[in-house]
Amino acid sequence: MKVSLHTPAAGWWWAAVAAMLAAFPTIAANFGQEYYIGLATRMLVFGIAATSLNLLVGYGGMVSFGHAAFFGTGAYAVAALADRGVSAPWITWPLAMALAAMLALAIGAAALRTRGLYFIMITLAFAQMVFYLVVSVKTLGGDDGLSLAARGIGESALFYTALALAVLAACGLRRLANAGFGRALQGVRENEARMEAVGFPVLRIKLAAFTIAGAVAGLSGALLATLNGRAGPGLLDWPQSGQLLVMVILGGVGQRFGGFIGAAVLLAMEEVLSPYWVHWQLVLGIVLLAVVLRAPRGLAGMLARG
Amino acid sequence: MAEILRITGLVKRFGGVAATDGLDLDVRAGEVHAVIGPNGAGKSTLIHQVSGALVPDAGTVVFEERDVTGLSMHERVAAGIARSFQVTNVFARLAVLDNVALAVQARTRSCFSFWRPAIGDAAAFAEAMRILDRVGLVARADAAAGALSHGEQRRLEMALALATQARLLLLDEPMAGMDTAESAALLSLLRELRAHCTLLLVEHDMDAVFQLADRISVLVYGRVIATGTPDAIRANEEVRRAYLGDTLPA
Image (cartoon, rainbow over all chains, first blue to last red; front, side, top):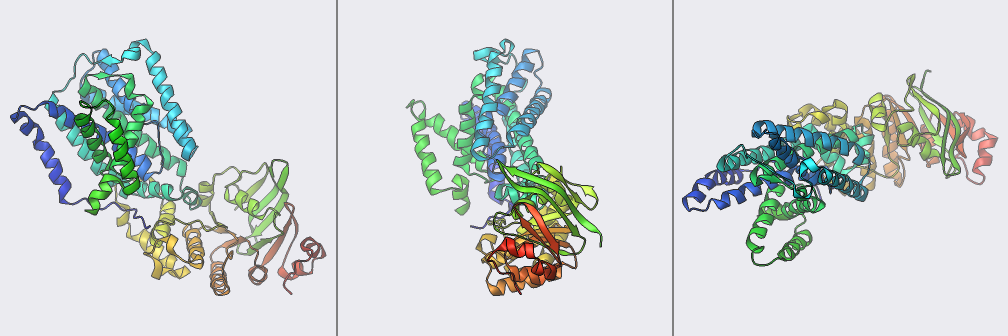
């Protein structure tokens, strides 16, 4: 099988999807279904997080099982700042992003010296360390987490911000993948030893990707904390890392829109099925199995094929 | 002739076994220097330590009067030492052109360019095509590297090393697994290469070694027992003993 290093432009359909999404809050409000604006925001926010993980897994070949560490850190940063009376998103979100980036830089510097299964395990271990550390800190609310006294942004403004950031993430991923950095990153995915032998600083390339992905995950965590009005330990725990991975695999590993499609489908399934059946994840499992066996490029790959 | 590479007192142990055991070796600028020796003599281990894939336990590797012993592999490539692999190691899923373009990109340091599309870098792709032309793979530029024949993959391997513009090329058994026609083609490529860079090669094909090399070093149990011209090596009694029954070409 031949793989191209170049991600082509997506065509008209994705601009149409973005335009339809832009009209969504007005339409939902017209039908008195404001509830669904929140759900759509969640889908966009998780889509951004899953896209950041896809940069690592799909473009860099680094299967991280600790992405919740950065996601949750972003959420807790916003909540902790709100606790101290700072709730303006244009202050808290960049700070959350910076904190997650620094954490990713530190964890990546150690974890990226391992590969494959060991990398999966070491990222999981670091993420669980962050989880237990945060849960044990009383000022961060322990097992209960933190509630935000004020959101600092209205519901529909939050939706449009999330939509704008999602579009930015999708465009940014393509820019990044097609730039010299993205080619090098995909080269590392294809053959790390060869990349080092032709003179690429492989560790630094991987660390840069890990830090960028951590920063973006931190931003999406910050958005989620703002949306939910709280940050809980569940956002840092390993099932959260697993859910993000499931989103990526479902949507399409290494597919530009894989993270968004995976997040939307998973959250839609949860929304529709969970009121009727507590074991709805059994259905998710079957769908995931079908995708892995029948469509290794995920739902995005199936859509692209037409 | 000036020395481009000077290896002094190199030691590498794996458990209790010294694969490299106080090895001294000089490579002169512009020469083709072949390393031969029986299986297990430590030839590949030597290449690994010069390329930076393995860190020696003792000794120094000096390249162009600069101690490179502590440098990582990619730093040594930047310094001017590149290698090819004994087992073909290319980007199997990528197009042949993309393989070489990546290697060209490594030299231009654009791996931390985050915005400008790399596909617009016409100069890099043109250079990659020129290198493919040198190794005779232009017609295969769009094929996936994994779909090439063994001989073609060996030539691609060579193209990747060439793209680094290294002044010292380390070739680990470049002829391995080739048929007569393929090795003849590679031999003429290597002859052409010597005008541009110094070659240090490990090779089992004795005919090729004795045709190509200016000097030969014989490695036995991790040390060099003799270095000299092909004629001198052929006449060396100690070398003949080390090879026992193996016949050196007349």
